[in-house]
Length: 478
Image 1 (tube, one colour):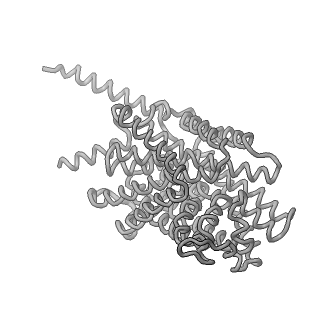
Image 2 (cartoon, one colour):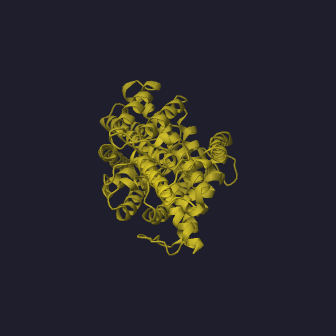
Image 3 (cartoon, helix red, strand yellow):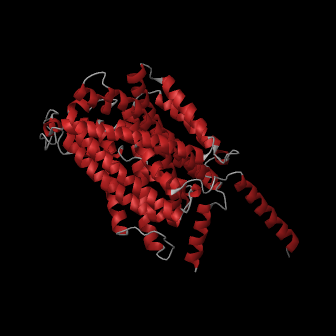
């Protein structure tokens, strides 16, 4: 017969070890209010207004890009409404990973978390390329030195802690929003609808002045339309650092999405309508080139938007470092990745989760291929969207009694629409460049092999996600 004292001592030792483990992996709670979450959601994405989206004009013409943007906006709105529900049900730093783990277990969580990680690790490298292009235009200096300065400076600020970093992000984002408003107002007097359709018509099926690349051009433009909204779904990653997450997370997600949709449509109409779609389709700095085309060289408007436009690129670069570090923190804390990656410093910042992906991202930025890096980031994003929407549907069906402080309007219909559109987006990435798509898929497969061979045997007990999983299993047994 077992000695009760020995059993109690073993249980006590296990509990003590578990407490020590999590004590070294604590984020700063209550550091972020709903307004900062709105700012964070806009910051994740605002660089997409300054550069990247215009490559969609080359793929689908203005009409193709417009249809793609409208469809993608619907997808993101439905997705944000669905994620708002899941974020209030499961307010943890894992975000989409936590939702999928609760719905589909450890493997489902890992598939979602690593897809998100591909998105957030590669997107800053693409943004760094655009920052280099803007700096080249402004100061005559671009390339690797700019990429290095960006990574070193902004990783350093994040190591100071979440509250400080997000306040700086909010200020930078507000400055960038002012630049967008100045651009929009400056373009209004020069808008001419004929400029939207000045790309040469091809001989592809369905080609017209509205769709110069034909029907398939709409699909090919989808990944670049996604760039208008990519990473807004990262707001729930701040759940463990948010004040009153059940109220602030839905406000942050939905509020930022509405702001981003308004900017995307205004820029798409007025930028191409004033300067010409053909003139912007290959530009590394489309807003600046649009102003130069309309107002001429060396005007204060072009200089202002170029200079302040850097703030938009920096805001997204800065904020996505926050996103990837929190995703790695959650996956590492749960044992999916080496547990050392979730260690936090005296400021409660996960320092290795900030630094190591930054080194990898800097290496990727040296390629200078911002448009191709966008496609790789979009691959991870769209895969994660499919899995998160499946999670929403599964949780609605299998756990209808689970507490939902916020409920998605339309329920499964809303997440179903987002799911179908996300599946279309996955295919669209393949249509644009199959080689890049397969490269991103190869990275994803490597993550999956790592889990199946190694990390699935080393998952950590007691994480927030694991506790939700235990509750799920207990309910099934009852």
